[in-house]
View 1 (cartoon, rainbow, N blue to C red):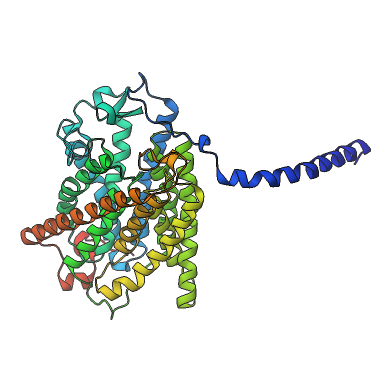
View 2 (cartoon, rainbow, N blue to C red):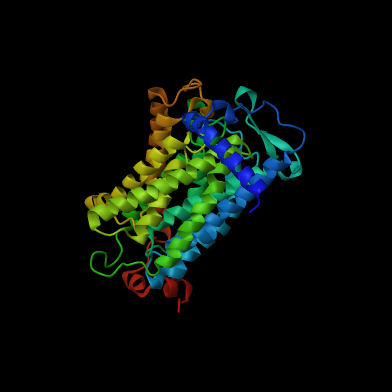
Length: 465
């Protein structure tokens, strides 16, 4: 090494030592975050003339990521946790729902969710995507008047992004009644439930005309619309269908946890599109949503694992992936409204809640939630929705209940409670009615003999070799 190089290294080291104290003093300020660093500017009242290419590119990417959450993510996650004789049937449920809801959403689901309508449901102004495809290269405005929300992306991209949410929600429900539902019943349930339950609740929460939207409830990416909705529907379905044959006696161990790990990993990656994509474009809010999503998932996975380790003596792979999903669920409604430290807290609470719901609660109550759809999505969705009211950060929240610079309020928590309660009650009642009607008309459940033989061969005439 030359003398000149040595001299340069010595000068660099000296400068580094001199700068270190200044850096240490700056760290606390950096850790607190700067409100102005996040783009919390309210949406303009009128959309620009042409779509923003950056925002559109991000939303196209997010749409693909969310679709990946169902196929193959959820399909693999659920299939890895059932018995070998039901693997193909379980994967078929997610795949079939993807196809069914796509058509339902195009025909009427999108219109009922995002048509103008009234406070409770959209109208049929967008039936068969009327007046949507014609404006394929124009940004659009949702709603009208002072409550209107302008987007910088084409409506075709928005409706496709929302379609992926409509797809994954009924797919999540199937985890509660895995191993025992007829495929014909699943098809009819998916169509009816998407139109009668999912679309109206999406309208309540995400359309400016919706009554929960007007109430000021915060649900950034689907705590009520997706997770509480799916979890409660799953709980009702598990009760209506009854327990699996042999539960408590037969070996119900997962067929292949490796598949479940791959599925959970795809869910984790896809969730960035789920949450950060819900910002509607590429900006500071999307960045914050992505950051807190990662933090919450990691915290929940660790919380579940360490709780299980302490109580059962061993940290399980199933616990780790279930915990990560629990954290992702809980941060979903809060992801665009909270800072990283609250994201960490939400993750820890979700991990512990999910562990309790998947172990103690369902055994105490006696229902057979096969793959913990309610224990993970329902309970953790409720936790996340309520904690959004506790931790929502004023400059990010876009609600008058939280003045700038504040975090959370009793008023916002009460509003969040109303949204949770309304979703829980409506979903429970409507799902129960839909299932009972289907049971009377075509039947819900396979026979005991068919269930023992396995759904793969009974329903689809195929077997996993």
